[in-house]
Image (tube, rainbow, N blue to C red; front, side, top):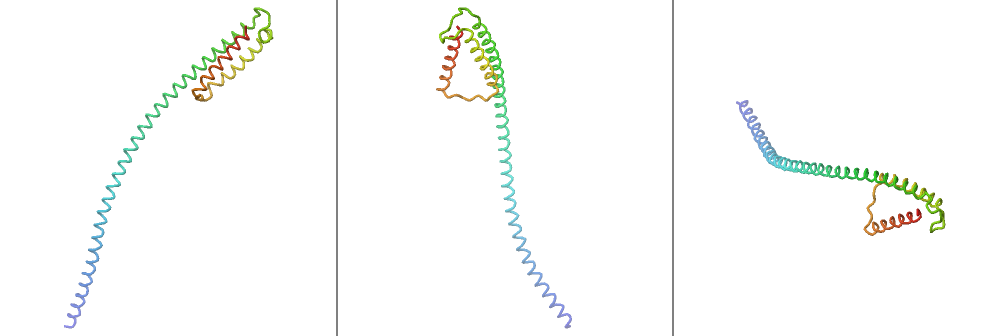
Length: 171
């Protein structure tokens, strides 16, 4: 009989250990369940943030495409204006050469208001025309600077004065 009592005591101890282990295991499972709920909530928030980010990226892409189209249109217009300016410069060069040739013909043979003969004014006009052509050929390739409203009027009147002076010298 003592063996039966020892075995019953051993079984009682093992059952107590099993109950204690089941209690600890139950607490860990409860913690895991609450952590799982937190994890699911975190995943849901993360999914929402990802969807918002994707929507923002789509908006950025569409804005970038629209801006690229605007920039392309502006670049095409600028290229057309550059080509037109180059054509106008070539025509102006031709007109300046014709004007220089016309002023080189001695009509009066006398001196102009500056005291120089027609030959002196012709060489000065030819040199000025060559200088303008070299500057004009470089101008379309440079970036245009936007003049302030006051400078635009002053530059136009200065150019007009230079043109009038050149015409007076040509006579």
